[in-house]
Length: 404
Image (cartoon, rainbow, N blue to C red; front, top):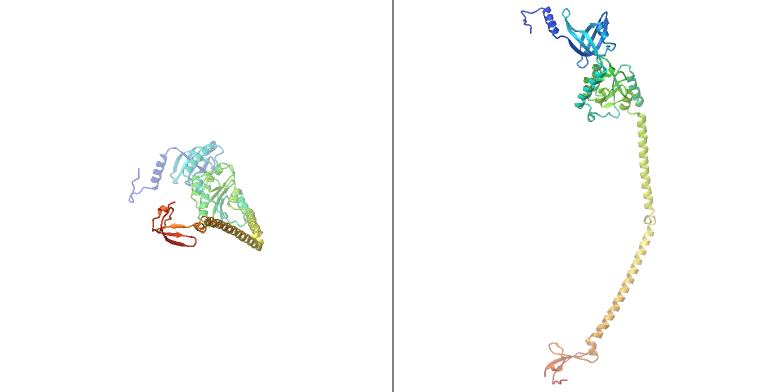
């Protein structure tokens, strides 16, 4: 129940602390999970801090040495444990702590099961989809590197990158890469590098180690922070067989820190070799094109029309003359045939013409209407007739008719 107090009727500090202690005491015994930090023993008592790596909160844990010894040698700084404890509130100092009754290390199998569940949750949200991953720039102006101080991973990335491209620039952020402070420091370094407009690629590198040492790089908070980063991120954690969740959410996964340097920076020798190859290929293409055009031009020039144009004119002239002579022959033959046919036709006409008959002494007798008189009986006496002779025409009157 809430305490009833006023400015005129306040309660002393001891009353408040006693009430807080009473409320905490009613929590009973609880099981708490966290990560051990600041572990030390003094006499028969062991002191440690149990930290929540996600919320970055911690609580003090105190317990007798036999309780910690019973948990085995796995209980060390950075280990994940489950503690069965009783909440205590020290009224004299106003501090809260947990009194450990039992400590159980979190086994590898359980850790793997938790990571698998977290992996499924993140995958269902689409954080691992290939289409959301961004390509790396061909030659970044500056590379951000997150790694341990003076670590082998730092040396591998820097040396291999500078060996591949001597002018490459780095901004190095040294952080803890294992233990209780790794997640927070890596996230803070990531935030600083992502806010730097000159940094075009961020490499998170760490050498190999035990599974427990690589757990910070499977932390949900860090994974989500990498997914939200605006700058492309290269994950180079552990060795080829190590696959923390950071590898799945990063834009590019490198098997080792050395591999990260190869993927982030092009090799100047390879690029020069590629330039030479492209230059040689361009030269071959250009030379081949010129040779083909030259061969075509040579072939065109070797044609008779261009090689000896006068000869072609003479040949065409000869053809014109031959055609003219042929035309003359054809026309002469046609005229001769037409003249012969005309002569034959004239002869036939002359042979069949009535005038030719009249020339032989015959005459044609016609009435005035032009009809021909064929029989004496067709003519009446005193009828005027016209007699057509070879030399002209006579008009006669019929004086009499003698029937044959």
